[in-house]
Length: 241
Image (cartoon, rainbow, N blue to C red; front, side, top):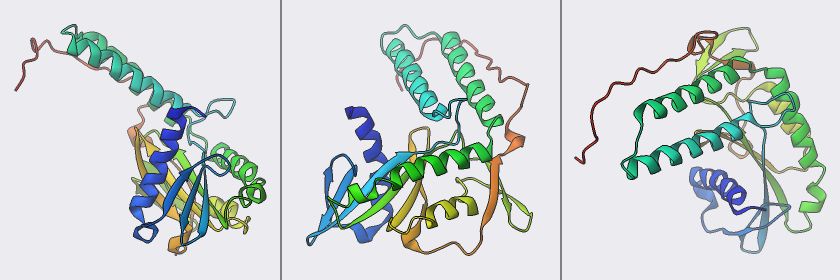
């Protein structure tokens, strides 16, 4: 496994550990199958990390991870030019504009059913390996890393009501997938947006008192055919403050 992939897995794990004080004092061993083993007083917890993004292409591959990589390269390119006094504001604005429009277009094409089917497939692929994971630990937890393009959602409740949310909603369909596999002791869902990680569900913290039927990206923030256009004004050479 590449160091970069392992680093991304550790980012998700760190977000979870920081959200739960009860896990202090555990040693953490990096590995494979499961990805991490937490040990305390001889008890071993295997944590298997995997991704199931909201933004997928026709092959159900992750578009969010691809966009994250493109944004990182764009920043590195223009930051290097800035340090070398070669910064081109127009070129930078054009790249940002292209990136924003790709993101908006992807979010506008979001399909909840495709996302759920992909999550189910990926979850069950890993669930089929739990017996193998348990050879190295006493119990197995799943840490699901779900990429999102922004944090503006419209969620539909079971009673048909709608509400705006700024975190990834966890739906009844997702609960059904998680609850089907009792051999998995704990399920944690971590959303990832622009390199930021946030725990949005932890079965170890109790169950929700309500269920969301489905969600979509908030349409009001997606201009559809209207493209984002950035106007750049020449403010002169940057100076240190």
